[in-house]
Image 1: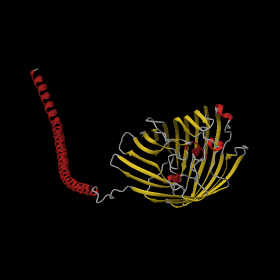
Image 2: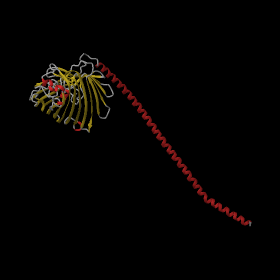
Image 3: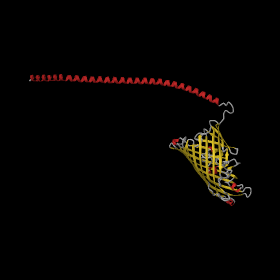
Length: 484
C-alpha cells in the first residue's frame, strides 16, 4: 500500500517537472516581448521630445529674427518721422513767408471775365413783350443789332479758413455797371450747413441761380422772365443744408430785403424788416453709370406795403401810372435729367429740363395815381412752364429745342376793371438753337424762335414774332465750376 502511494507521488512529480519544462520557454518569450514594447515606447517618446525641442528652437529663432526686423523697422520709422517733421517745418516756414505780402497786390483774388455779346434780329418792336405779365422795363430785353449783351466780371477768393467772398458785376448794353452778386460764404460751418450773406441770386428754380452765360439758350424762358425777371436775387441771408445720405438732398431757406418784387421790378425799401422769404429743396442721384437726375421744389413769398410796384404791363397798355401794394407767392417745381455714355460727357451728352411756376398776387391796386387815383382790391393767379432738350452730338457741336407757355389764368381788378381789360392771352414760343464750342472757354451760338407773346391793345389781335440771335460767349481767366 505504501509502495503504491510512493509510486503515485513520483509520477505526479515527474508530470509537474515535465510541465515546467514545457512552460518555461513561453514565459521567456512573453518577458522578451514586453521588454521590446517598453524599448519602442521609450524610443517614440525620445523622438517626440526631440522634434518638439527642435520646433521650439525654430520658433525661438524666428521670434528673434522678427524682433530684430521690428527694431530695424522702428528705427527706420523714427528716422522717417524725423525727416517728415523736418519737411513739415520747412513747408510751414515757407507758407508763413508766403503769407507775408511783398506788396498790397500780392493777395489778389481769382479774376475772370465773361464776354457775352449778341446780334439781335427782331421782326417786330421788341420793347413791349409778354402781354399781361410784365412791362417793358421789368425785364432786360436783348436789343436789336449788335450789342455788348450782358458781360460779367467775377472776383472770388478765400478770406481765411472760415469764409470766402465773391463779387459779380454785370456790364449792361446801356453802358451801366450793376452788382448782381456780392456775398460771403462759410467754409467750415460743419454739419452739412453753409451760410451765405450779402447780395446773391436766389436758389429757387433751376436756371435762376445760374448766370446767363451758362444758359442753353440766349434768352431766358418765358416763365422765368415773367415771374422772376431773368435772374431773381436779393440782399439778405441764405442757409443751405446737405443731408448725409447716399443720394443728394439739399434744403435751403432765404430771408431778404425784397429789393426786387420778382417779375415786376425793383423797389426802394424804407423799413427795418424782411420783405422776402424763400424755401427750396433739391434731391437727385445717379441711375446706373450713364444717367443722373435732380428734382427741385421752391416757394417765394414777398410783400410791399407802399403802392410803388407796377402791376403787370398796365402802365404800358394804359399810358398812365398804376401801382400795386400787397403780396405775391410763387410756387415752383423743376426736373433735370442728364445722359452721357458711361458718365463721360466729353464727346456726347443730352440734358432734359422742365420747369413750372405758379404765381398768386393779392392786394390793393391804384389806377391812374396822378389823375383818378382809384384804389380797389386786386388778385390774380397765373402760371407758366417750359420743356427743353439739348443734345451734344459732337465734341464741338450742340443743338437744342425749347417750348414755352404762359397762362394768363384769372385776374380780378375789382372796380378798376372798368378802366383796364383783364389779361386773357396765353403766350407761347418755340426756340431752336445750335452752338459751336471749340473749347470749354468759348461758344458761338445761332438761335431762332417763333412765338405769340403780345397782343394789340386796341384790337386784341395776337402778334407773331420771329426773333433770331447770333451770340458769342468767351471766358477769360479762372472760373468756378457750374451747378448741376
